[in-house]
Length: 480
Picture 1 (cartoon, rainbow, N blue to C red):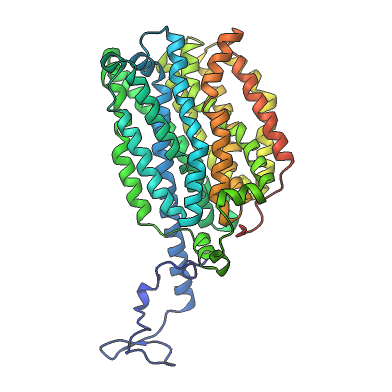
Picture 2: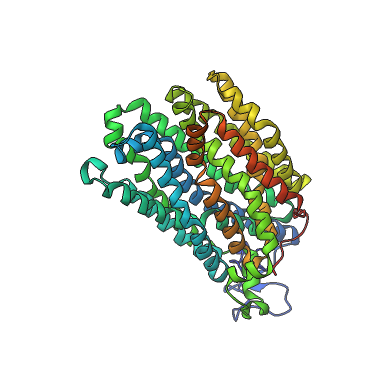
């Protein structure tokens, strides 16, 4: 990847290049400075070193820009999930604890209705106006909605209006967040060198896990330092307040970053001037099979991610009777291992291929989910930590590979739209509803292991999708 050819700012600062000035001397092999001295052009090794440094700098900035938006999003989701029992008391106090928890998770789930709509909206903007443009606005709207949640009065103050306003803000947050994961992954995959796309694109799933980890640590700190009364009154608001400044920082970083080389290359091409139709229309007309495959494999990611990383602390406390501090401790340890494992799986996907890694994840979940859930029933801390780590490593085989696979399966001109549509549709149907469905299944069946069968079914669906797929790791990203 040549940053110069992609249209970025010149990196030859050390050459004092003034080739467009009147002081240049044609054919002299260098540039004549204003004092009459001649400065020869840098040697090839120096120029190559400068370009390598520029590429690495661009990659670092792209990784940071991709990381922060998803971090804010998932810090919010973690805070909401880990504080679900508190939020239930604040916004749904007139019902029994199980119904209040179901209502809290229902608000969480309904907000996901906006995700496919937001995916179409942000995907179209990202494919037409650029990844950077869409991402710089989505993070502003998302963090703003999250910040406003912190300012909401509870049910005791304004009655039914409190949960209604909570739902509306969660829907705005879901709409804006729907462009984050897909846009950041497409952006970073288009920046990364071909042989290391899996490793670099792993910054996106790593950012979600880091957001969850930060949320887990923050909520653990709140529980340790705040009384129940203070937590119900003002303590739960703090993590949502933090979204405001974090969102502004994220927007600043993105506004001051160039768009991806692949997108700029496509935008500059003559073919780009001929607009066939809206990006989402083109995706559904020309790439229906790819959308189906992407949707199918994302179903496992959606169910597993929300059940194992977001809902699990609540499950351990409400269904198995584990102490809250021990539940958060187990989640914190497993998430730390998870982040490291994500990068390992991304590297392995560069070596062995996306298809093999994603199929491996499906098989592991089909075989091991029910036995691992059964082990949780003893509520032994060491066993719980071991099981959560095992689940986390299994999930990284999917999560550490999926973002790169979805970016590679669609061509550049509709990459954002195809990724966002399939990813957000699966998350709306299976991800956001996972905590609600799990709680409902336990209530209906009377079995605390019921969510395991739901997760196993998602793995079977994903396996079918991956069997129908082709390998994408060892080819260049397609433009059209």
